[in-house]
Image (cartoon, rainbow over all chains, first blue to last red; front, top):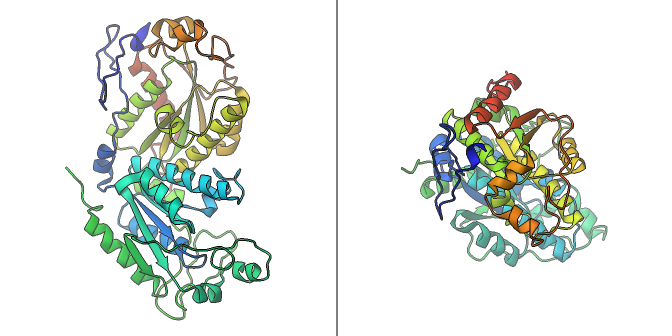
Length: 219
Length: 219
């Protein structure tokens, strides 16, 4: 019969350690908690949710911040269109329902990464307040909304991917800022003026993370 | 205009560093690669895909292995029914299509965790070869199939969750091993006899991980 014969699940307990009758082994269930991961990593985990217009610099800022955090020994991961839209959300189109489901899944993955002890940075336009609120409700107090504030005219001038030109030519329908609204955050944890230098933007977020105690190991 | 004005994307390059004309800042895109994460963690990442009957000990073994890896300083995460079925896959039912989509999403999340430098352990019955093969195709050489081999009679005797009793009473339809097939892996990387002690099972996987070089930092 072996080691599972003596299993009992203790209600609400993270750690279940029951000596087996048939060997010296014990049974474990999810003993590696978020707090223990923080002790291993020497930092807390958190979700930094970047939102803003296309071209506002969400992904660039997230990756620059990640590079700085990495150099300081922090465990991070960026979720953006590159690794999510074509992977986990590759089955989703661009309808309202698909957009909502897209954000829901990103929130769920982010929650798993936070549980895994990782500082996770998400970089999606996420233009609607209701969608962002759902992600916030899902993740709870670890949700940090970072509004990458950049005038539409600047984003249009940058037009890194040529999307604004195509949207204005009618080639892309429901493009945020052109033919679909961007709803500014009402109470974001951070507003970053991304017309400033990248270093200034990164420093502003790092300062916030210090204030939040992400760097400190809770004991 | 600021720091995005001078962006160029180099084809195939992980690191793009272009001095901005308007400041001393540079532009980064995904500079924290999987290899650099391995250097930070002092170990490689990999996906350990546990498969087997309900009650075969997949989740117990995964958590016990995670505990041992944690104690050795490794960064891990277990994906199982507890944190996936009610979260990311909470919208899925139990039809054939839902089952396939469930496994696809687990594969996609696991791939993200591997990219993030984490040793990820998945514990799902995943009874069909075709589904597991899809996950393998998605993740590539990092996919390690671990067959938790345990006679059906033993699983029925254990019946930790009372599911076999309910399945045999007709209360659960298409229950693997009772009213739905379990397709044994044909070429799994590991077969674990989970009637043995938990410690023996964990040791067998640790030995494999040493052989795979997961513990060594590639330079």
